[in-house]
Image (cartoon, rainbow, N blue to C red; front, side, top):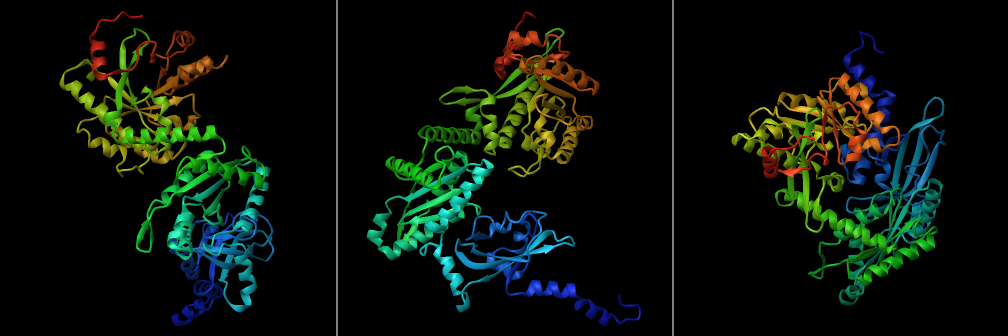
Length: 579
């Protein structure tokens, strides 16, 4: 290290010529694309040439798997699955790859993978470098690339698809995984070739391939079998639901018109799906089954989807119709949902101690749907926060009306179940829950109890704690919902500001253990100064089973079903015979 007498300029020059600085400069300024990954093959450093090749900025590249940018022409997986973390590596390996461009074009390249070993010879990082094939010396490699590619679209051809499928089936058999094969036929494309000509037809096919490629994950394979037929191989997640989701994206990708000879051309696709191992266990049978399903789809009309299992096709179609209706209902909740209230009773004298807000869907075919029938679907569709907001807003409006009329209902506390997504600040309208509430009322919400799902206490708890503190400042009481049915860290429970907890009375149906579990949970909650409330006491059998459970509050259809706000007001004013 330079001493204190070394001139500053010499110090700067010494650092500039340090081997580490020279190596970094060589990495950055190299005309060859280079990237360094960790053992899980996620990019930790990439040079300018690499970013230019893949069409991403450095910030967009870091942290992503290297396999997001390249398709291997060798066995599927050398970019991501081999070698594993902690394995001793050879000095260098080469692979034929295709670099996926932003516009969907696939560029053949030669990829070199060097293991960066530690002192024990174990690889924890890897250096990827590549060169584009095109010089006379590289012509044999280039020919090997194009032997596996369709010349019109640049997609893998039948040879590469069959190799990928064989490897995928072997791996799926070892790991007991599922695969899905989508057989795609562009409807009435023969007419396009006859009217526009084969040259224009090939150009349109290339555009079809680019659109389809953008909707397929890099770890999956899109191949062209020839003519107007394509195949998608879904690995790792080859479920019927995943196949349906991909099929829908492929249909949507073809919706914008194709321009040919200054005319707008609309194309659709018939898609058949075969699943491994339920429909077939070998490559030939799987492809034949998917093609048969495609032909069945085509008979039903253009742009259709069919599975080998006809019953599965009907089930998924019904599921899609149900989700569409549900999504439309959530976007117009005032027309499709009704907020009802179920009384909570004191066990000692059967007096009403509070209300539970319950949301019902006025289903057009199935009449009124209770929450258990649709809340999980709403959460999966990403609509839970939107509907939860409407529920809270409506309950606040009802409470304000009760107070204006000096109704007895205005003196009761109201409990509302929060969806788990509400515990974070990343919501659809960028307004955290506390900010949303302050826009609904200028007074404190001392009458409101928000029930936090127990499942939400295991995720993002630090962010939830901040939200809890802000909600308490608004006068809101907090409760934990579903305790006993979901695992909760009791050490965390002592730190959380909960005043109440709900316990499902149906746990008594567990032979010999349910009643003891509920009793133990109640005593533990009381020791933590948390009030237990038994819910779902819906029949006399359950009521008898929880008779000895030490909870002072309970709720269930046995005592009173959920009612609309007007019906509840009338019921509360009527004389009742205590049971």
